[in-house]
Length: 573
Image (cartoon, rainbow, N blue to C red; front, top):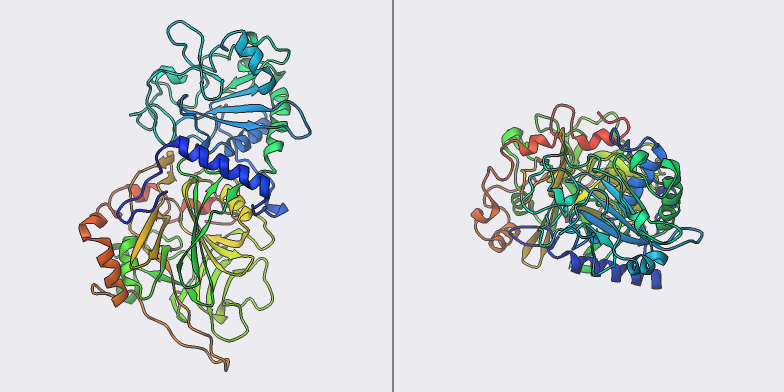
């Protein structure tokens, strides 16, 4: 997601993104510059597959894991909806290209093709392979070949693509796909293709390519004996991918004293949208993380939500502002909040075990810490810090994921420590599950870490020079499934900001009080600079664009039971 002071969007041009990802991955493989995930975080967990997806849980788990390696950087420019990645099986065997097709905002693949490299020349010499699962043939001939890779596909010449999902341009989410993409007109995307691939009969090689489509296994399978046979073959290739990095951290750009921003790439887990990862690392000797609530000082919380730009203007001295924790239907925090030693929200969530603690009251304590009540360290005392924000653990200090696997996808925000003890703010604007997000954090060596509110509320503002740059999540989920809404910026009722640190007292006293809340309409001198850099208030969007209407409620996060993000957390409401 390229930063833009007025608007944010996903980068255009899959070919440039694919080239960038391939070259970056090649460099990482050659010189070994990638942060390996802790062994405990490498284990893969798959959510329950949709009904009718596959009878074998093992096959479902392998397809879910394989699909996670095919981010939109792997999307085909020629074949709408298809993504491809070259893979080598663990323990030796023929190198292959793994093709998968996806429906609209559906993370479970609709169709699968495994094309063995050693058969490519023989297959092409015999003529083009027949159509991919369910894909229509053009002009009475066999399927066209992808000129860039030599693969067969059922391309529709000139067909447009949605820039995020690869589906036909102009497609309404949830509506049927065009017949050219493999589904009957009016059919719900994700249902079984109309028939098995004929690639096996078209290939003269001894081992035919494998083709399958929903429901995986059964009559649609060719080239393997049932679901177990396909699972055996697929597992060899999936195991070959497990050692690959899940994220590239990117170069660090200084954006302030003791603070740097990097724009990396997710190589696993971001199933729709930009695979960009935004990481801000801040020296806790210079910065503190302070939480804020819109209902402070007697304001009506239900009507006091603010845009991220407003929070950035009004928080004195802030150099970074993000969305805060989750909240109930009355817009009060679901967990404890304390700023400057004053409790903003005194109620503790009974089952959330994580605290972001900043601003020690006495010398000898870490300047910033992620406190975990289930895995405490010596000296972990929430009451010994001036700033506290309670939320749920995502990755603990041993690298263990503390969230369940789910196919609910959303943009994500987390705060954690890196191995040098710096404050790390991580935002993934694309669509990723909480468990996959934990694996990405582990690969970046950012743990322990807690997640904050996700979905459309996942927002980041970073001061650069005299102005601000903004990043926006565009993916969430509700009762109807995973959703994408471009340029929607809901109001935030909870926020957190990096503000200048206050040194702890040397005499062990309680320490300074810092009860400053957000400034009023005039703001601080710093906010005046930020406002001038952002342009007129009209550029910030109307009040309706910032949170009115049903889109925020459709996230499901702000009802009486709290965010759906928390539903994937063991013990959450």
